Image 1 (cartoon, rainbow, N blue to C red):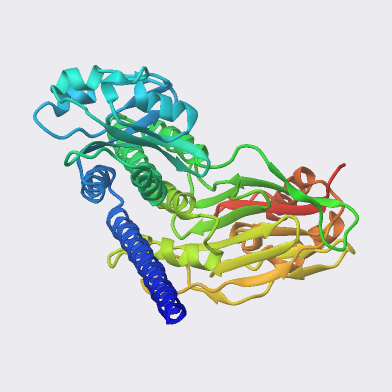
Image 2 (image 1 turned 180 degrees about the vertical axis):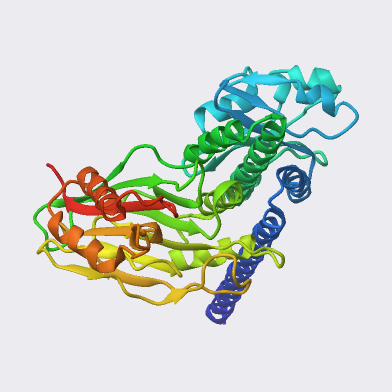
Length: 472
């Protein structure tokens, strides 16, 4: 009998343990679901506006609410001065707070900005890194706090902190992990907003400055400087991080270089290239429909959106779709043809998307010159719900791609005959072994020779990307 009772007790204990384990798993799943929903809420909030001031308010309000904190603040990094500053401060003493500047490394926020490490402080006044500059100005006691870096594309652009958890309990390590998760989408949205804000200020400054000038020449000089400042001034070289690509004896590197010559002091052609991660190079070349100051401003907006929105997760087609939605206006007559690509240096895979642009040429290592064909979309700014497609091709070692604007192929001579694709292909065949600098110069020189003194009627831009064996 005692044996039966013992067995029943053991079975009961096992059932209780299983129920407790199941209950724990259910509670853990509920906590994880709640955390996921909170992060989703944050993403919706911070992506609802591109205006910096509005975004800062949303970040602070959302962080305080989710972290159950009394207050929150975003402190931005001024790279030129090596300082932290409050771009937005709410309350009666907001103006005084905006006057405060912290050196990088000063105070808890400065320490986080300097080290890139997150911190949880249970007693702020007792922490040796504590600075009372802000607290004294606003007469606001800080009991406890969390402070995390805002990092976008590997660069610390500011810090996010929440102050004084409501109730008696201090912040927990899980609270710190949640705030770090909040900081990731926040940083990306904030950098986009900062780029957009800087663009608006640049355009406003341009309008104010040019309005004060008595002569058009001074206006155009300023516009030229601003436009050229958006373009890379040097070539870019990116080496594969993983050594030799599969099936190849040597590693690979990609070299990007471009040239531009506006038909007037300013124009609408543009290009860009930059690294998006260890193995991938992004490049783009476009042509705005108009000329002069309007085209330069449209070009500046387009380039800012391209650079601000491009991330390692986006494909070229997704990028153009997103940028087009921002550029499209019902009453605008401006648009831009565009070609952009992402080259994986290690594998040679090239993903690209084409928005009504001139078809690029690929010069193969064996000497063949071929037009790059693929699915095309409309130019940016023509249709608001346009979805751009991704295409794929492989660049082998020794291959190069040449992207250009129609200022090359549609250049005219004195008799209004056009330069055309055949002449361009002939130049690429003749100069296939030339270095990128020489090829760019020879392409422009050949167009000038054909024009024979005729006035340049359109902007000229050419971008070359080579995939070559790495020099080990």
